[in-house]
Image 1 (cartoon, rainbow, N blue to C red):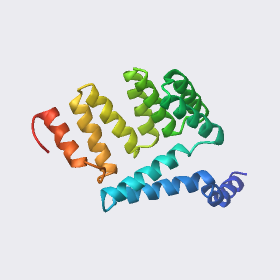
Image 2: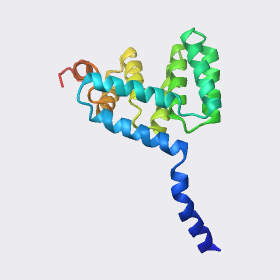
Image 3: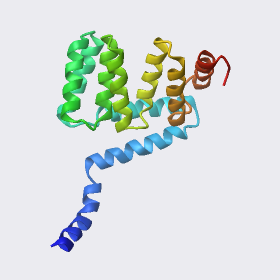
Image 4: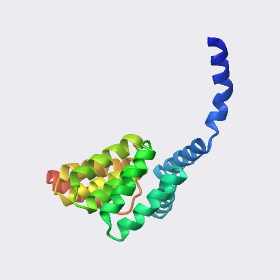
Amino acid sequence: MRYTLAILLLLTAPALADTPAARRQAQIDQALDALKAAPSEEAAALLESHLAEMWLNAGTPAVTLLMSRGLRELKAGANTDAIEDFNDAVTLQPDLAEGYRQLAMARYAAGDVKGAIEDLALAVQHEPRDFLAYRTLTDIFESQQNWKGAYDAWQKVLAIDPKTPDAQERLKHLQQQAFGQEA
């Protein structure tokens, strides 16, 4: 019986790897590899936009709908409603990093800095290469004048997305604020 189960798992493994979610993850991995090797800021910006769209649409249809509604509400300043929708999205699909990142944005807009930072930590726990989460974390730390935190978060952005616009200028500014010296 044990061997039959093992053989069955081996035979179905390729089929499991060829699911829509696996294909989407492979596309995301390819785009992240391309982002790290981007030859210019312009090429990086196109890849950043493409990755943001892929992450936003990576959920189930119900989660994608909640995310779209939450984004509309966030844009309209209905932060409480956006928080509810993003909370529902992460409840339905707790492994989706983008849900936590958007929830962080809504919490931050509502003035909940601690909650936003906690949600961003969950986002990068689920997707360690989420440069957008690290970029948001940099912005939050910078607004709080936590220069060391901002500097550390920005270094994570650069490790993933070295051609992000104005990357080195911002790194120098943050290092000077954090340590009193240039990079």
